[in-house]
Image 1 (tube, chains in turn red, purple):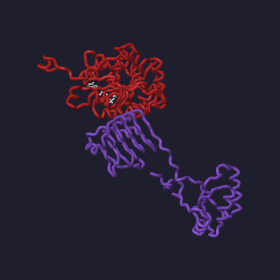
Image 2 (cartoon, protein in one colour; image 1 turned 30 degrees about the horizontal axis):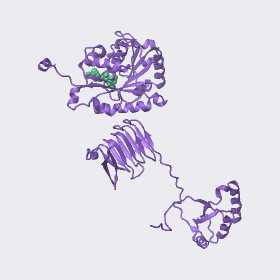
Image 3 (cartoon, chains in turn orange, brown; image 1 turned 90 degrees about the vertical axis):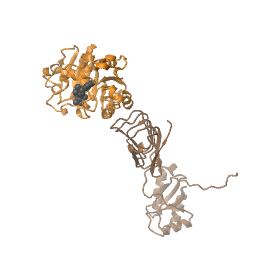
Length: 269
Length: 221
Ligand SMILES: Nc1ncnc2c1ncn2[C@@H]1O[C@H](COP(=O)(O)OP(=O)(O)OP(=O)(O)O)[C@@H](O)[C@H]1O
Ligand SMILES: [Mg+2]
């Protein structure tokens, strides 16, 4: 049974697109046929991170409007088999997404894919509501700071009241916390909230903790999802999160300060 | 000690009121018989108050009306809304003069209902328990609001706003397992975070009115 996963946050710039790309790629690497859908109409970002921006011909809105069929708009990933991207339009605004149209496209995707990962835009406007409306699972992406946690709480409220599952009284959307841009050092100095603080406030199960990492910027500049870089801490942390998403139980890494070795202490890192 | 043989206590009762709209006794008798024929059980032995506000004639035959009603096995406890001349007649006949609490039609009070919510209340959400208490089994997040006409009980952290006694009940309280609120209020008296900070040592507690100002007391929950 196909699963619709929304990557959402409320607050902007917390790492939704980075996470959508990484998690979709991770699911595909595990052999699951996966599509990642860009709901951030007008901003088009996912295709850059996925490194397929030059291959966009038709987009999500074209499919909704019947100007192209799904197969014309889906972009097959060059590196990872089982992975497809449905890009967003750069020229439309968010009102191009209608509940009916989105529902129709997702229904069609469900026939073909095991996982449908929806990259939500920031905010609580139409675009974000459309991205979460049909979700079975929500990955609530949060940075360890007060305003981000507050916005995530708000989105959790929306999931509980405005999603299709809520409206129809079905089993509630499964909510998972993904804590991104985590820096144990800054937690220790009290500049950031700790994993425990955020878990206490949001009170939903923890899917993963992604450390603040240079590798993320490097990966997005070269159009390769960071999960591909298995040397990097962020890449490993995303792999762990994907494993947990598919039911494995794996201990959290990168949540405490790294003990610097003797050489590192002398020469710096 | 021996029980006193009499005691005076106040109570309120609901009585049916029979409005007499016409001074003509024959007409009243006829219509009353029609009504009794339809629902005899309803009136039988029922205590009645007679409302005479529609009767202006000071020489109205009150004794005649009384006989008419008694002959149909109705129990008259008194009259109301009568001009003073008729009121004097009533005294002579041994009928009480009754003033109704409010002449206007008061809504019957709705029964109190408790609202129980078993989930975290998230930022942007608002829960209102009309006419009763609100019990939250979960946390109330920053930017969330819980409101009750009665008291509010939170089995979790209160980080948002809680307003008890929203329609004026000064006896309402707010009880929370962990008080870390943006605002608390009871019957319109409120405290903001900075007021609560003065009581930061109290984690679990009860917020209530003491006279006109709020107080918070520690509770171990
Ligand atoms: N773990 C991380 N370490 C370092 N930088 C990160 C990390 N995750 C994300 N970033 C950076 O944060 C910025 C925002 O990331 P991203 O675009 O994924 O966020 P978003 O939530 O999709 O933003 P928007 O709300 O605008 O869609 C990017 O510059 C990205 O490189
Ligand atoms: Mg984005």
